[in-house]
Amino acid sequence: MRDWEQRLAQWRAEIDLASQLEGVEWVPAAQACDETGVSRSALRSWYRSGQIRSRLVDGPHGPQRLVVLEEVASRAQQSPRIRKRAEREVDLEARVGLLRHRVDQLEMRLAALEGRT
Image (cartoon, rainbow, N blue to C red; front, side, top):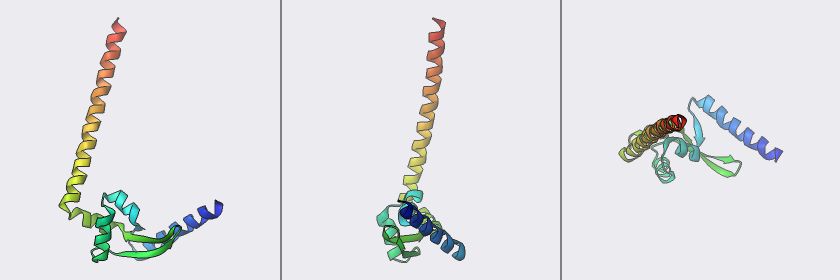
């Protein structure tokens, strides 16, 4: 297991070094999808059509696709569907936060009422 951890750390260091040398942040495609909300199929379409840069490198699990995170985020902003989905997620998070606040207030009121009796 120790060798695996060392190989993974070395691989991440290689990605970081390439990012520093080129002045852009190269990340695995899965990470770019997670951070931007872009589907893997959209990401694949973008790098195949040359809309974003990508490269294939040897990774700990075999060949690994890397993409430039900033380019993925920029391209995602151009997509109305992806932008709407992100806005819905933010709206949903805001609603959940509001509901949590209301539940907290109700719990305090209930505790105050129970304390009176």
